[in-house]
Amino acid sequence: MNLVLLFVEYNVPHQKGMVKRDYIFVSLNALFIGLGIFANLAFEEIGIDLYVFGFLMAVSLYILFAKKIVSKLPITYYFAFSYTFGFVGTIIYKVLKG
Image 1 (tube, rainbow, N blue to C red):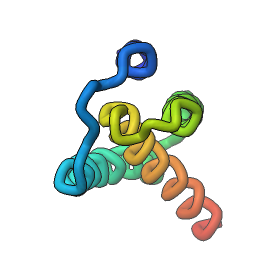
Image 2: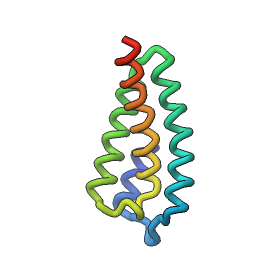
Image 3: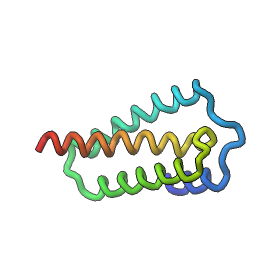
């Protein structure tokens, strides 16, 4: 489902771009989702979840930077922020934990 949203927004970006206030609210919301992703990955037995979240992170980051109109891709920004925070945070935690 998330891939569909990413590809739809990639092909049909929003006409009106996000403003500073929008970035703040989207980032705060994405931070909470990122914490949930981190909790899912860091404190449970990792199966396929790590690969799925890593793949979605890579796709969302690719779309976000390939299109070069970040302000018109709020859903992609949201996914990129939350997946990156959760995935990278988990990797750092797992490496430090040993």
